[in-house]
Length: 97
Image (tube, rainbow, N blue to C red; front, side, top):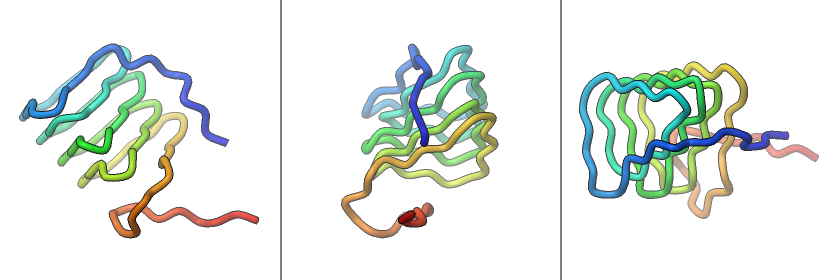
């Protein structure tokens, strides 16, 4: 079972657009748009309004329903998907009994 235990003190808010190679010491919440690589020893939390196009290297990653991600992910600890209201997107969950 995935448990979010990371603190993400950096925030890329809705309406903010960043391009390039970004590095965060303790994680990041992405509610805006990132075009480029993200590296952190913490968690990358992609909100419903967030968009990332590029490589992600992190200890953990959470993608909310509506969040958009395109690229390669390297995860050190765990990956979590919050419940989706709509079908589709680049991720699929297997149902377990």
